Length: 314
Length: 314
Image (cartoon, rainbow over all chains, first blue to last red; front, side, top):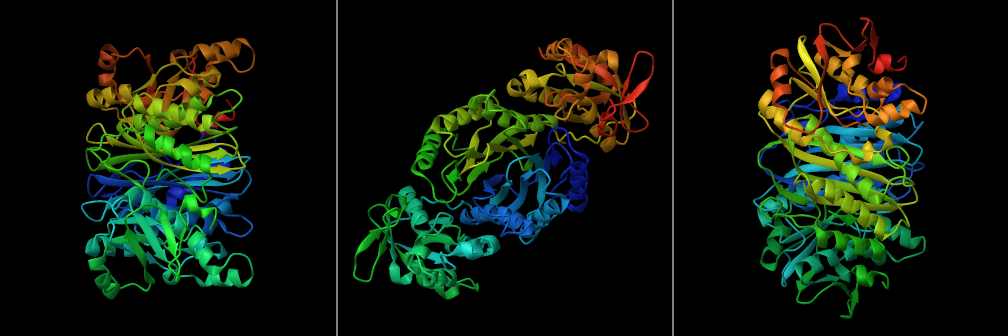
């Protein structure tokens, strides 16, 4: 791969050569990289985690406010965040870029360098790709391959009544910049999986409430989040101060935080907090109980639905 | 995966449930399918072939002349054709669909059924995906995983002076319908790799001339195609009869035939032709010689460049 489709214009062929020339792959792990019909990968084991994510101009980024480098970086990071959510270690990536005709070589190079920087941090090289030019807006799709850190991958479906509910980082207002800058929580995920075997895990892409609802519905339990324990980001506070939704509403409802939301048997909760070795904040935000859906529990004991069913009214 | 990004509209969530409900995966091979952050795949071996292809509205298909089913089918077939070119057996797929807002559920269902039909034929299930709605045109990206049929994957770089050059099927005028209907040459590829170990192989997506040029440049030899031996398709003849480029020009220059172009040591050529068990046509079209580039050799002995350098003048 890493071929241009259809009749290539000379600029496109030159770009593909530029990308192929930059690519340095360990031949023992990646005997065939960009430049052929497909890549050949020697995986460390037969169990593979596979995920695909697309980011589209005007939906996930705007070219007025994001550089090509940031767009490339985000496209990779969003996908790696899914590997983190599964408790997987990254292996390699393939990417497709659909670019507006005339964007120019410097855009493609910036995009590629952004992808490369996000990928290199996690030793997860780009091994192939596809490049298309068209009249429409920019669309970037990244597929990531990984391998499970432990014997089992971590799903959304293993939470049980009695489990403690945790979240990494702080939430809300990601649109102020975090959505372009976040680091996928791969290190935190690997540590958690190796030492504490989370019963369920998800990365927060739709928002704390909706994603807690995903764990609830897949696990067959109810996720109660204590309003007072939700880690509200500075960006959410700032946006609230400027008017509009309150900071807590943003922390619960805003998407694209790409933090980990996970559950552990309560008996492990204290030790996890004590041993946590990362600068990344870790918050015990609630518990799984019998029932269904995700709710926010206020200080007065009142519960408010926050999953996708309840979200509209929040 | 198989999550909609950002805030889902209720229709999108319903579609994702429809897809998840249709999905029947062998849990021994695919312990986790659509519906989580990523899929989990038990590959038959650690060596993986990975390829990604995108098809975009207005570039690779037009919604006035192609059904949703055909678009889905093509998106998968184009990608599987790359696995065939590498001598790989399909394992599984992930897909991303970026859809024009308002296209409606029946479009998505048709698209999905088209993907499924192309995938099911080769026992290569869709294990995950991503769905995005936007104001722009339709973009479909498919990533295919496979495993090499033999000890080595077949690259573009192994052709040697003296090798015979073969092509499957007939060429040119794919735009008349074949580009939506072609069957990836996976069966032919597996047979060839197991019995005859092609020295180089590629699928014809850019056109016979340009793709022969890829083998030439990667292998460090010259590919000579005999004009009289090029298998010209009925569509190419029909289009020529209606005016414009002659049929041979179409057969050599048109893209998207998705046939196999491969090289074998000459000593194996006769036996390959004798043993060929498929209805698919097989043509010995030329030879690899010392030198560089791809050329079309006419009956009078004159040679004309047909690779991407020469193509403009053809």
